[in-house]
Length: 172
Image (tube, rainbow, N blue to C red; front, side, top):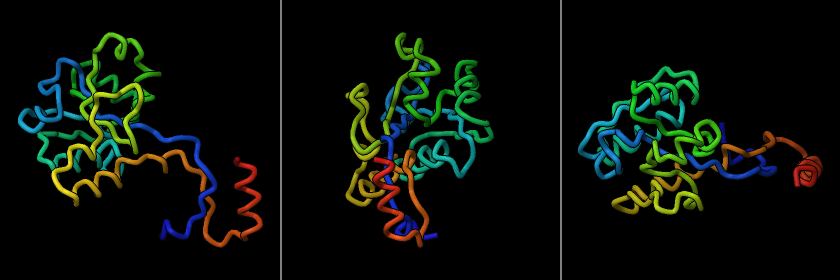
């Protein structure tokens, strides 16, 4: 697998992910999460719902206990609602669509966002790269926080140039 050999056709926007917790969670900022444990839900170890919090735990020292095995965002949000876990790393759009009342009523707090730039409706939530303590961490965080590929359309290696041009034109 060599992603450099794939052919970019286009994308329909960048997904903004957030590390979100209940407003009554023990930590209400990322800095507090360095000292107070948060229990987070995740789909599986190969999912960004696990990998992003694990990166923050292993690189920055966040006190995250990550519980895997949830079968999607809805079961994780239900576990948050029931108080089984404090939060998760998932799509900001999911919160706005599935729990707009929680967003409006301030029942959730976003500790970090992952995107190429801050979302307009989350101006005070730091990007993961803002938490970097050195250039190496910043480069690593910038690489993982960009979610452009989440909504990308690509073609496999070996597609003829004229066909790629037609696909790109059709996508546009």
